[in-house]
Image (cartoon, rainbow, N blue to C red):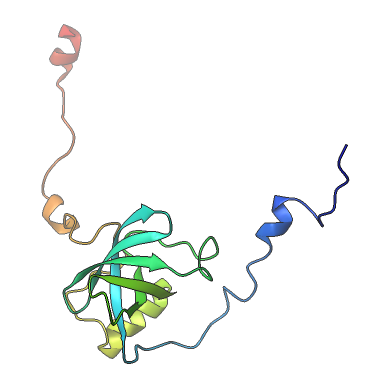
Length: 145
């Protein structure tokens, strides 16, 4: 029987989220970087995102963030643009929801950017408020069934 040479199981490898909940300094974009909103996750450490400049790009999640920072559709991320491939980018940083609201307040993100959405451009809640999604039955209708 092989001898255990490790220091623990998979729960040890998960570790603790150290300092993730603490406030961190807001990072703004620099040259060669752009803000983007994730449209959908593709798997294999990749996602499809719409950049603020209007371009839809295939983004690769960098290894430092892989399996440590979870990215979902609708998240605001900072991507590094590639000089040699305009349709691809690399995810550098994921903004927390409060950081994304601050970016929008500072004018870094356009007002048309919708935060806290699963998939960008979904149905508006206000449009569905008038429509009833239920059916009312009379007592006679229930007796017939």
